[in-house]
Length: 162
Figure 1 (cartoon, rainbow, N blue to C red):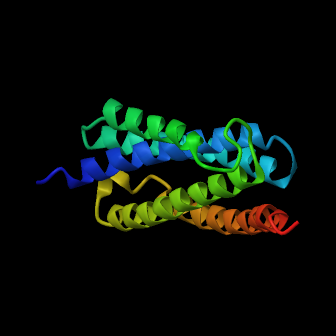
Figure 2 (tube, helix red, strand yellow):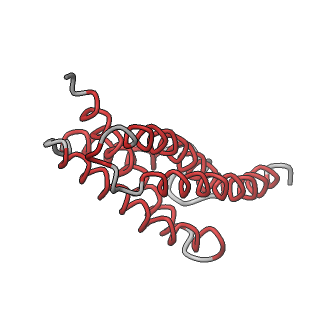
C-alpha cells in the first residue's frame, strides 16, 4: 500500500503547526478584544488537533516529520516579513493578512477533517477519534474568522481613504 495516508497526515500535522504558530503570533499582537479572545480560544484547539494527528500517525506506525515541521515553522516566521506598509511595526494591514492566512489554513484543515472523518468510517484504527468534532469546530472557526476579517479589512482599508 502506498504511504499516501502517512504523507497526508505528516503534511497536515506540519500545516497545523504553522497555523498554531500564526495564531500565537496574532494573539500576541492582539491581546485584547474580540479577536484576542477568539485567538486565545482556538490555540488549545489547534494544539489538540496536532496531538490527534500525531496519534493517528502513531496508530499507522509512522511519525511526524521534523523536516516538514521545521519548514512549516520557518514559513510562518518568514511570513512576518510581509509588505504591510510598516516594516518594523504591526499595522492594521498586518491583522488583515494574518486573518487571511488563518482563514486559508482553517479551510484546508476543514477539508482535511472531512476527508479523515470519511476515512474513519472504513478504517477502524480511527473510529474512536472525534474527527467529526474537529470538522464542526473548523467550520465554526472559519465562520468566525470571516467575520473578524471583514471587520479588520474594513478598518484597515477604510483608513486608506482618510
